[in-house]
Image 1 (cartoon, rainbow, N blue to C red):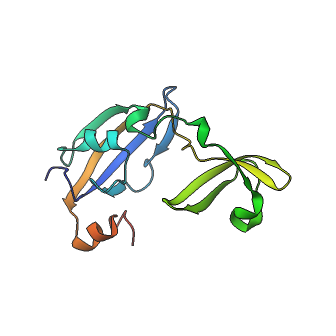
Image 2: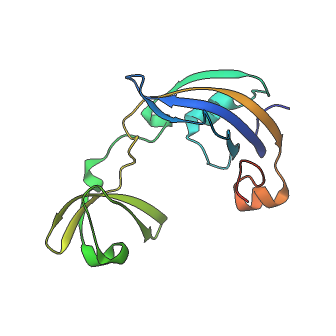
Length: 158
């Protein structure tokens, strides 16, 4: 079965940056399980996996444009600490906030009195992502998985 829209895909992978440093890997653990076309992966990786089958080895470099985007300094803001989780902020902390567009993860980069400087840029923005992996399994997604937007069962959401 080929990887395509609404297929549940399991991949064993390693993700590296330009310096060859491992960013993430499934080595020693379960493969990553996702639904193709549900927005669970960056677009460049989904495109590279499209049409692949169980057993295929995939090596691809994903540009920032098809990965986590380019860093946008204009998104950095000062917000009242009371608006953050538990009304506390620590430099280096990641906090989840609810916005009109859904949840957003912010990095606290500074705290000055009652205000915190927060950065919503993804930690991997501006980075070319080097992916190498093997397609472990491809199957049809169930109606419930498609409705929920993620895989269920072993390696997926339970």
